[in-house]
Length: 388
Image 1 (cartoon, rainbow, N blue to C red):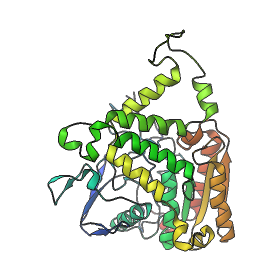
Image 2: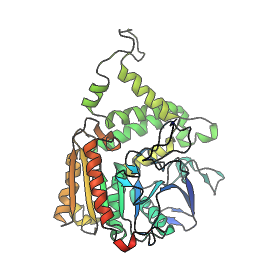
Image 3: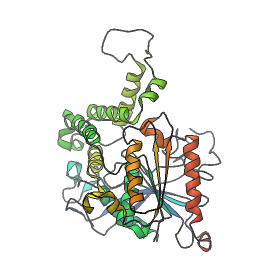
Image 4: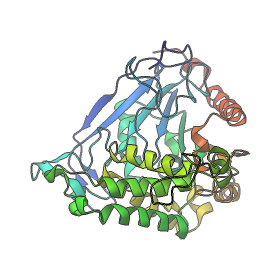
């Protein structure tokens, strides 16, 4: 637990649940008649709601982005290094909203929620989500707070894809778009990784075709394998070598199939922890949303044409050892923005942490992040900066 709350922390925060009664028509042609979104907010919304920043989360993320839920918390929110007083997303300047997306397993309506038609958890019957569906729900969240235009929408990985979709679908509703460690669509290799993860889950006998809640079981083995596979793709070869090498746990080989190398033990630990903290049906949904993401598909598969809709300024960031969403994929976005004659800045950060680098406070990364957010702040008209 923290001995004391750091001065640059947003402090103790509490989640909120926002209920929406307006039906939400989804890309899969199904409708959610009503739904809840769990959110956290940091900072103060100014008089005309022009200083708001939306944080979009990645596959296994949630609404708890910064600060602590209690003094007993061992760790702060997942992006605490970037959000707080004096940090890149400075909560003395910005009002920050983070949410758990629909289909999530941290309080927002999802597979674990009760289906009003059956009185039982939705389970695998929960509608398939797309990034565009999430943007629609986030638009209603903005309207709930009276936010007519976001100062910025920021996200890493799948979160960056949501930010990009916002710029296309609702170009007048954001001034800046920050896309970090993302891609304009998944490669065949990335879709393959996701399918192997889903197969690991669905073939676990305890998955029961997604109806495991009724039996009081959890497909732990499948979730562990899915997370272990995913975690390997989030790290880099250099990072794994530097962290683990070929170090043996006991200093010698045991000539059996128990974990002997430190990297084996680490992956099993990560898988075990994830299997008790994340919902299997949500994992299936989130990976499908990744697979389906392709905003250029509605524009004759021409990314510059899709991004021609945008009116905001862009910041795109990639990391040298990220092979899940490599710098080449970020440069595809940048090239398309240039072709569409949009204002875009690009930074490629040297890091040994692979895809996970977007979560780690590399000094150059944080400096670039902070410098761009200063521009976001400068673009809030002076007369609009008085606190509400």
